[in-house]
Image 1 (tube, helix red, strand yellow):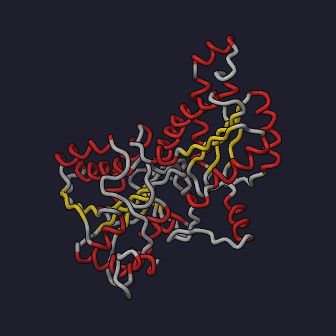
Image 2 (cartoon, one colour):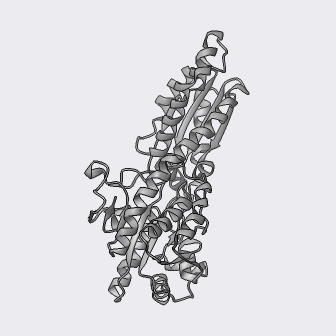
Image 3 (cartoon, helix red, strand yellow):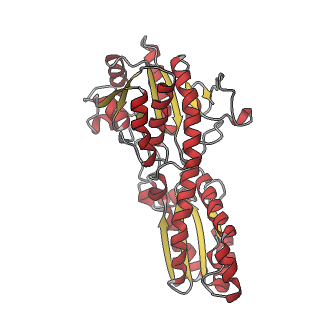
Length: 391
């Protein structure tokens, strides 16, 4: 198995849950855990363990940790130029062939990929290459993404915990609204193409506000900075909806005049197409990663839009805070741990039965498949390149 791509609050728990599932099935499986994702696979770097009740008990401690105990990396096996430049394969080498040779040499029968779109798409490419070259590999993926944007999987691992942690982050940040008159606070949340995490984080934060008995008891005192209106979210910008800053700015100017603060949640991918178009029009090079994605950290959408919004609302001070790394590096919460453990049971059974697929509750079947069934999904993008969805 390997973990790959960006972090999510599920990687450590996924490893613990998989090992426990094999142990509960009384399967003494030799486990080869590749370090640093596909980088470790290409370089032959791994940790070897054997599933057992004792190991499962020991690994249960992983539930207390965020990140991945194995380490992650972003490697596109089909991007030969990048793999050569990073020293993962020699000049003239083929990363897919190198990965296939390593899996053959290590006698791997089942590959568990714990990752998101890019991780599992690369696993599908690798599986296809192996089958074309006479090596049958079962690939069972775990859908790790805080974006929760993998159809038809109802809930991807880590998304709920990331939402809860993002809300926790903003509970503290929002108090900065009392630090300066006419304060604009922009909370930038991860989400390149999907506004799910931003919306879900906003939902979790507003649930906290609605349930706060302290706010209710203080309301009659009319403190200007400690009331629901000042602490609330005044706008949410997500990639799926075109960013009409002129209309939003006019409305938020009235909010600023009334409450002396404006709180905005924005997905990091919101309005990126507009930023890219502006850069290209000016003849600037748009920074991209090995997968062809725009490097969001380098174009900094939160800063780009906050500067424009600040002028529109007449802010005296603007604060941009990003919860992404705080949220995604958390240990899995109760909801995600339960989801992971339930899915891992069926994932291990599918692997033993040599059925490739991706673990997850199927929203096309009311949220789940019966435990004994595996259904195929053909075509589409992202994890649907895998050939099944497992409850």
